[in-house]
Amino acid sequence: MKQDDQIDEAALERLIPAFYARARADAEIGPLFDAAVHDWSDHLEKLVAFWSSVMLTSGRYKGSPMAAHLKHKAAITPAMFDRWLAIWAETTGEMLAPAAATALQAKAARIAESLQLALFFRLDDPGRRAA
Image (cartoon, rainbow, N blue to C red):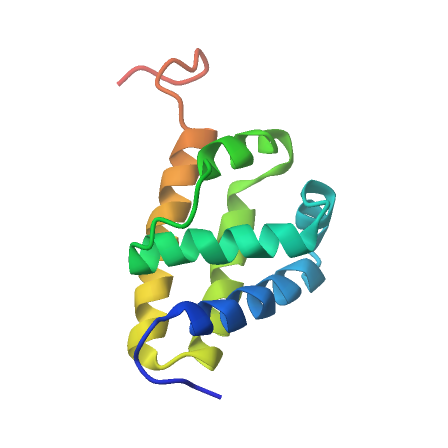
């Protein structure tokens, strides 16, 4: 059931748990999330606060997504970001009006790109070829 074009706290409180239920059930990324997250109730609250801060500029989120992902760097692959984004697009597209879904998808893509640059691209990597 799609809501109106607005992204609000209520929409995020519906979207985030639904999305992570799908992500956790996914064969590719589910095991990573289940290994990394020990208190899903607390984690979902943090994620709603994160998206509220990102999309609504609420300032509710107090944390470091980069640090959280760096702790699990050894288990994360670039393909996992693609899978996460695909499930995100599917879920937002089903649950939200097109304008809201598109806004959330665009923001997620930019965040994923930033995280991947931090996790997988290092200028001081000795294995990197000189230009």
